[in-house]
Image (cartoon, rainbow, N blue to C red; front, side, top):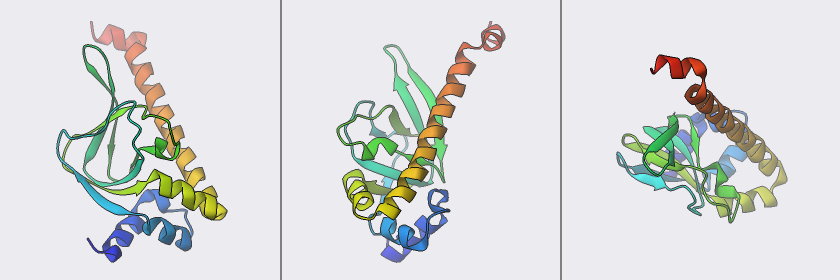
Length: 159
């Protein structure tokens, strides 16, 4: 895929819709295309991987490994983000990510992202502000999942 194609995909992604053009260009300079096959584990809970992804197509499950089963916390698709913890150096992933179908994404190295944020504070603010929105969305999705699992109505409906 050409650099022009990468930039075109990036410009269409909801993550950057409030970014200034120069910030999208800076992010585009860090982008690379990746693909995941169905059932491919992108990262495991606890992994210290450094990639942040913007999903272009396909679906990815965020999961928690339990001793006797896997708990799906959320399913992500085109227009979603994955791997926000990549910019928190030295911290492991909070969930496992697994492709539910063939998935295409734009990948960004967390170390390079963090350096770009430090060297251009206007870009850094825009990126981290948007990233905070992603973290907030994940917390809300997890909260709703836990509510559904432990709701008295849900327990009654399952009996």
